Length: 173
Image 1 (tube, rainbow, N blue to C red):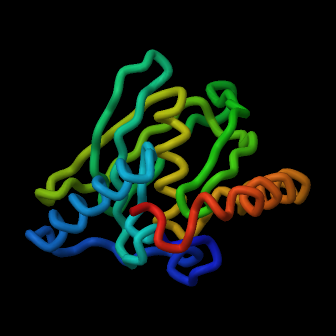
Image 2 (image 1 turned 120 degrees about the vertical axis):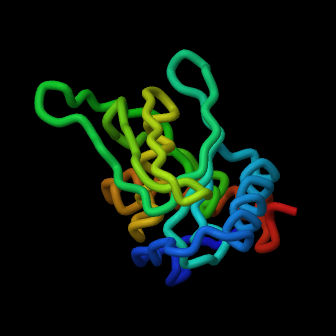
């Protein structure tokens, strides 16, 4: 798992222009890695690939699971009176063992392209909304720590450091 601080994690990813077996293989590897790490989403940069793509298998507020792959994501968030923030715990497989509250809109939609080169759209609330935002951020070079206050980041860093022995460099195996 590529960790925060690695350059690929902190820059916008390259747009996907070729939809071939290599891309499908990358997506399959990403899904396997996400499941091995007990995650609900994973961006290509998290396994060191400079590709604007993420995978997810995540429940919404009702518990209904959605599985998907999005290339070249464009995030849509509610604005104005429709925007309600959900300040709930968030973590990242690239900064394992730590969770802090992170305020994000309680609904999100993402449009992009699927593995077949055709348009896709996913939307949801609850954890799914948080996941779509988190993974789309990764493709733009943003880690959720960039959205935290200094105080919350200090708390996150402390938890991460305390759990370091549980997440060696080769994690997940």
